[in-house]
Every structure is written in structure tokens, then in C-alpha cells.
Amino acid sequence: MCEEHGPAERSGRRSSAEFAGLDLKDTPCGETPAHCDDHRHTVPRPLTWLIWSGAVVAFTGILLIVVFRTWRWSLVLALGLAVALIASILNRQRDDAAQRNRPVLPLLPRFDPVEVIEVLPARITLDAQGHYQAETEAATGRMTILATFGARDRDRVRRYRERYRLDRDLGLPFHLGFAVLRGPVAFTSALGAHDPAVASLDGHVQSFPLLTGDSDSVSAQWRKEHTYEVWRQPAAPALPITLTPSLVHAAGRRVLDLDLQWSWNATERAGRRLAIHRIERLQLAVPLAWGDVEQVEGRNVALGRVQALDGQEATQTITWSNQPVMTARDRSPRHTFSVRFERPIEAGSMLRGRVEVEFRGALSGLEGVDLYYPLGHRRREQRAASITTKVVADFELSLARVRYQDVRVVPDGKRPEDAARSKTVVFGDVVPDHHAIIAVTNAISEQGYYVNRVLENPPRTGAQANRVNRHWDIAGRLYRGVYPIDFHLVVNGEEVLDGDIRAQAGSTEARLTVQGAFANPDMEEQVAGVWDQLSDIIAEQLQERALPRGD
Image 1 (cartoon, helix red, strand yellow):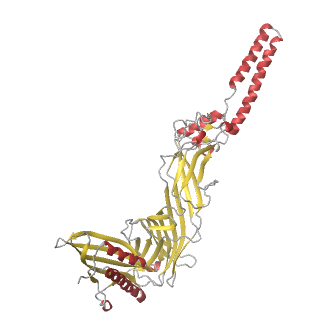
Image 2 (image 1 turned 90 degrees about the vertical axis):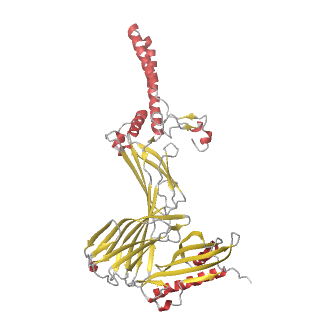
Image 3 (image 1 turned 60 degrees about the vertical axis):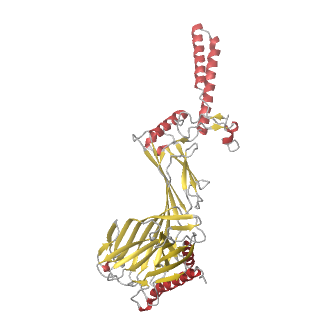
């Protein structure tokens, strides 16, 4: 029906017989289409009966002429021939009209889940001066729609040809329905349609021997791919991963670690979040001068060698495939690739390779794909679309600024400079309740620290019934460049209740430790500086919550 006479006006309209006989009655889209009176183009029935009627009249005229041996009955013969001729002409015109106005053949194959993959290319570099840079390029996407034809679709093709008396060699297009995209999509018109969010699913019968009857197969697969480019915003999307090298302490400079870190929810653009799924592949090329690979941590690991070409250094490759990630929020958002070599790692060497990380979700904002039958109605049996974003980053990492690292733990009782740093500080008249913990964690977060977890053990009654022991465990980190500095804060204390749900008195004990890897004195001082800063923040927040002393 036209827009003016839409579905609200459907009742009482004349039905169309255009799709009769195509085995659509028992399908979700089998409801007979209706036409409004102004745009009725129902295919008319053939005038075969009138042609035969004229032929019978003409034959009767011939018999009368023969029996009575007179041409007086020639008028009957002429009338019959005229009726048959006119009916043939009209029938041909109806055939031509049916050919011009016939609907596209609707087919109802079985669809597989739609697959959408968006790729964000990037390049990660760490130069000899220690400058880390991650650059992204325009993201592209590919939507793949698969369907499987069966015997019923082949029968529909045959019935359609019979209904419209079509030659078997005539090219015959078909229509499978529509794909409608959900979400605030932001990409170029990927589907070749006026509306970039709607795709018409069609093809030609001649491309499938099953449908033409030239094959005895029980099924045939139809495939359609759409590629598109995600619209670039004024600011390029931030890369949701970082990759940093380090040399493992106390390993004789023979163990290399590559730390891949990510955000639990990487917000590429407002309202569009990516959740990590897996590390699909990481390929690392290292100099042959480091000797054979003695040990590699991880599974699905392959080793190879690349001979020197055009004066380049010969390398050996280590490839990790399909590495799972820990998705629990209390886990560190990182994965370490560790390799032990036969000989020491040379300072100033260059690491090259590629990393591919898969996230759930789409950069473009696509949330789902709904499939519709060719005559309407959404396919409710269709499984949810698989929508992923793949970050593909080529990297080139210099070890010139990566030193043989150690780990600094603050405070360290063996270091004279830590003598003034007390690991445990007691705050009298401070109640260790959730208000105090919230104040401390908020103040820490405001200074750029990432609080990874806040855990509370169940309160326990102390030696006296009105005294309750509290215990809190807080952990997080701070990034200085690409190197993390971790902190761990344990808060213990006792609440004293006096017939009320609120504590009347208490005492709190805070125990803070900070640790981070360092490769030079500046980095070591940064670790100690983090402890000093956090200690001041904790002391300030807890002292502000001290209960007033009585006279």
C-alpha cells in the first residue's frame, strides 16, 4: 500500500493475488498483501477460457457449413475466429502487463547470525629517547550476512516461473528481505541504499544451480558482504591498549616481558563502550643474536625464523594466538608475554611486530542487526548478531631506554632512606567506617590514581559486646608514562558503640605499601614520591574525621 493509504487503512481493501501459490501461507510473512483502490495492480487472470470459447464457436461454424453445404453459417465461423483472435491479443497484453508489474520473487532461506567486524588500525612506537606514541587510523567495518537455500526455495522458483510463464533461461532476480541496523550508527553508506541503516537483500537465481534445478544438492549458501568506513570525529579515537617492554630482574638480562594493558571499558566516543574479549594474536620479531628461545609463557605459541633481506637483520619470530584474558574486575587489566632467551638481551635493540586484540562492541555505535522477511515482519527466530571491534597495531619498541629493572617497595626496612617512613600509622579517635573509606578513596582518585578494588571484610565483635572490629582492603595504581606504580592500603580499626547504631568512639590503623618497577634513579624517586603523597592524603582525610575529645 502507498504511504497515503498505509496499514491503518488496510481493512476492507482488495487483496493481491500476486504471491498466491508460492508457499507463503504458513510463514510469518504469509499474510496476503493488500492494495489500496488507487494503486491496485493485481495481476489479472489469463483469458484462456475466452480463446477456447471463440475456437469452439468457429469450429461449430465449420460443422454447420459442412453439414448444410451453405456459406450462410460463415458468420458463425467469422464470429468465433474474431473472438479467439481478440482474446489472444488481450491475453498477450495481459501477459505483457504481468511481466512488467510482477513482484520480485520472494524467497525465505535460513539466515545465520549476522557478523560485524570493525577494525581500528594503529601504530605504537617507543623511540630511543623513551618517547611512547600511539597513532590510530580510520576505522573500517565489514558486515557479513549468510543464508542457506533449501528445497522449498527451489519449489518457489519453479512455481513463480509457472505462474508468470517465464522462460527458464530468463534472468530472475529474487528478494530475501531487509537488514535494519540498530543504534546510533556513524559510518558512510555501507549498504548501497538511500538509508545507510537499511540493506536490501537480493540476488539472481542463475547464480545458484540449486534454484535453477541444475544441481541435486539439498542446500546452497547465499553470502553478502558490506564494507564501510567509520566516520572520523575531530579527535581521533584513543587506542584502548598499551604495549611496553621490560627486562625481568634477577634473570641475567635474558628474560623479556611485554606488558599488554587495556581499559576494562574503552570509551571510543560518547556512549560507545568496548569490552575486551581476547588477545587474538601477538607476533614478536627479535634479533637472532639473542640466541634460541628457551622458554615461552602462554599457550598456542609458534616459533619461526626470518632470514636477512636487503641488508636487514635476521630475526626470529614468536607468535601467540588466541590468548584468553581474565575478565573479573578485581583482576589486573593486563597480560604479560614472557620469553627467555639463550643469551643476554642486547641494550638498544629494536622489537617489531603486530598485536591484534578483539573487543565486544562497535566503534560506529552499531548495537544490533534485525532481519525482516521480504513482505514484512521481523524475523524473531534470528539469533543476535556478533559485533566485534578488532584493534590491529603494528609496533616498534626500542630497548635503548629500557634498563635492567628492579622493583622498589616503599617502605623498605633495609633502606636507610625509609627509616622515617612508617609502614603503619595509628589514628586515635577515628572511626574506621565506610564514611572514612569513601573520603580517602575519593581524595586518592582526585589526584589521578586508579582505585582498582575496595574490599570490606565482615565486621566482627571484639572482646566486648559494644566493640566491633573493621577491616578494609584497598588497592590501585598510578601511571607515570606507561609504567604503573601500584599501591596497597589496609585499614583496620575498632568501633565503640554506646547503645546507638552510630559509633561513639574508635581507633584506626592504616598500613600503606607502594611498589613499582624502576630502571633509573628518577623512576625510583617517583615510586617513593607516590608513597609520600598517598601518606599525606590518607593522614589528612583521617585526621579530619577524628571525633572530638570530651572534657
